[in-house]
Structures are given as structure tokens and as C-alpha cells.
Length: 396
Ligand code: TGC
Ligand code: FAD
Image (cartoon, rainbow, N blue to C red):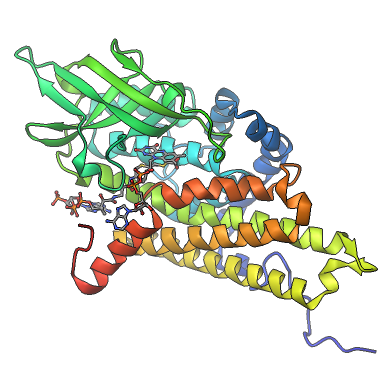
């Protein structure tokens, strides 16, 4: 009888027992979000993706009730959780769908964070409690049609007229949650530098048409923001920052969530491939008995486990206050690229079934193409790390 080489059975879903690196409250939070995703998202998300819809009201209320919106912020109805907890939530949400994690990251890290970090007391009291509860939705407008990787070239501008009011003009592009938002954080050039503006989306002159024909992140709303002489009171400008540091610091927060989220998507693809390989039979037995299939599964498993370790390490660094932007780039670049590789390999392992949304893999794979591009493309993160290594700016 063949003797097993290992004294105990490794868990194929957590081979290195990375769970042992998490504290009890972290595991509890992780399991709660996982249960929500399994029960309320996975049964329907394939259909949402097929139909290009995202039931934002129900989802916003549910994730608000779970305390996930702006969960890493303190006060104003926010949970005040650790960075690690926020990362774990993102991991589980993205195991459901990148669109779900996008919704939560944009709300918490890109719309609530700038209000929390740079807003006036009035901004915080007016917006944050409702946003934490999910009854108000936010979006973040930085990218423009001609200004993507280089946001400091933006054309959107705000001018103050003699009354003190701001008049905002310009177009933002590819804005997650744009058409469903109650409030947009819009970054614009002013005579005093780049400022963030808190723009209620019912302001006259503001519109947010949906961007259609997407084959990625279909269960997520992506929009243009058009500002045509939008008049705002003087107090609409975020008082705490007047440079690119404002929007770029928000990106750090969201990129941190993404480096966890991408692992969740990769794990979902790997697990789908493992289950499929054990059940699909060819040449008289399960395809998991072929050496080549085992090599593919082992490669996927190693990549997912490595990505998990990187995420947990960066999570601990952030909670200790020692995580710099170029280290966030390490995680965003590497974990998203890893996730896309795993998704493509899993897609191929599922054969023809891999091309249908009956299975989650191609949905994740297509979503990850957006994740690879947004929040700083793979190349931009390479250059951020290159600059940290060498001191040379190779962006232009
Ligand atoms: P640079 O001249 O280097 O710096 C300007 C000011 O910003 C500060 N800074 C940062 N602060 C905090 N965090 C960072 N990561 C920072 N990077 C720079 C810097 O210290 C300086 O501060 P100060 O006070 O001296 O003025 O900036 P730059 O304009 O040359 O930009 C450099 C570059 C290329 C890295 C940056 O533009 C960049 O990251 N580009 C990528 C654009 C991007 O990621 N866009 C994302 C849009 S949002 C999105 O995609 C949401 S998807 C949401 C979803 O659905 O999940
Ligand atoms: P470009 O900047 O035009 O880049 C094109 C290519 O050139 C890329 O491969 C890039 O890596 C490469 N490149 C650019 N500069 C360099 C360089 N210096 N060296 C080498 N290569 C370079 N933005 C928001 O503000 N808010 C949102 O909520 C938001 N949500 C999004 C949702 C989705 C689904 C998507 C797809 C995008 C979203 N974005 C959002 C926009 C996103 O951040 C941008 O798409 C991204 O920053 C890249 O900009 P770009 O698409 O204009 O590409």
C-alpha cells in the first residue's frame, strides 16, 4: 500500500495554514463577510454580470449593516476597524465579484476617506454617517478622457467668482458608482492648486451618464461625470489639502484594499478549478489525476498562498504605521497580476465550460482586466517602485 508522504492532510484551500496568522476577531469578521458573499451574492452575481446590472440599493444597505463601509475610519458612524480587517473584508467581497469590492472600496476609501481626512466638521457630519450606513452613495472623480495615468494633467477646473461661490467645469471618465452616487468627490484645478470638491449630484449642471458596452466589471456602475458650470458654495472645497497629495493619498487606501481583494478573486478561480478537476472525467477518470493538471493546480495554489502572505504582511505593516506608497504598489502590482494569471489558467482548465458565466471563472478573469488597469496600471506601479529603488523618476 502506498504510504502518504505527509503525516497530516494539508488543506487544499489553505495549504500553508495562513489562517493561523489571523487573530480570532479577524477570523470572525472574515467568516461573516464570506457567509454574506456565499449566501447573498454568489447565487445571483453571474446573472447581474450577464445583464450588466448592480442592485446597489440592496447591496449598499447590506454592506452598511455589516459595518463594511468606511470601516477603517474612526467616528461618524464608521466601525474604526484595523487595516487588516478592512483588507480581509475586501478579500472576501472580491471572492464574490470585483464589482462588489469596487463598490465598497470606492465608497470607503475614495469617497468617505477624503471627507474624513480633509473635510470640514460640517462635511463629515453631513455625509459620513449616511455613507457608513449605505443610505448615501459616493464616487471619486479623478480620471478624465485625456488624463488617466497622469492625473495632474487634468483639465477640470474650479474658479471662484466675486460672491465666493465656486464654478466647476470639466468631464471625468470611468467613474465607479458615478450614476448612482448622491455625492461626488471631484478633483479640480484651482488658482491655489488641485482641490477636492464635495459635489451633491443633484447640483444643477451636473450629470453622470452610464458608460456602456463593458465586457469587464459588468456588475458595477461606471460613468462619466459632466460638470457644466456647476455652482457650489465656498464651503464645498475640502479645506485640508490643495495638491495632488489629496487624491493620491486616497488612492493609497483603495490600492491597499485591492491588493487583498485580488487574492480573493484568485482564490475563487483556483477553488473552482480544483473542484472542476476532481469532478470532470476524461480518458476514464477525473482530469485531476493527470500530472499536467496537478502541476497547473499546484502552480495556482502556490501563487494564491503567496499573494495571501504578501497581503497579510502588508496589512500588519499598515496597522503598525509603516506602509509606504511604493510598498502598496508592490502588493497592487503583484497580487493583481498574479490573480489575472491564475484566472486565465483556471479558465483554460475548465475547458469549454470555462467560457461561460455558468462558472465564476471567466467573470473574475474579465473583471480583473479592469483591476489591472484601474488604481494605477501595472506599469505605473512598476515605475513607482523603480523610483523608490533608484531615485530616478521614469514617468516622463
Ligand atoms: P508627484 O509630483 O510625485 O507628487 C505630488 C504630491 O503628491 C504626493 N504623493 C503622494 N501622497 C500620498 N500617496 C501617494 N501615493 C503619493 N504619491 C505622491 C507627493 O508627496 C506630492 O505631495 P506635495 O505635498 O509635495 O504636493 O505626483 P505626480 O502627479 O507626478 O504623480 C505620480 C504618479 C504617476 C505616481 C501618480 O499620478 C499616479 O499614481 N498615477 C496613477 C493614476 C491613478 O492611479 N488613478 C486612479 C484613479 S481612481 C481609480 O482608478 C478608482 S478605481 C475604483 C474601483 O472601482 O475600485
Ligand atoms: P492611460 O494612462 O492612457 O494608459 C494607457 C497605457 O499606457 C497603459 O498600459 C499604461 O500603463 C501605459 N502608460 C501610461 N503612462 C506610462 C508611462 N509613463 N510609462 C509606461 N507606460 C505608461 N478613475 C477614477 O478617477 N475614479 C474611478 O472610480 C474609476 N473607476 C474605474 C473603473 C473602471 C472599470 C476602469 C476601467 C477605470 C476606472 N478609473 C477610475 C480610471 C482608471 O484609474 C484609469 O483607467 C487608469 O488610471 C489608467 O488611465 P487610462 O485608462 O487613461 O490609461
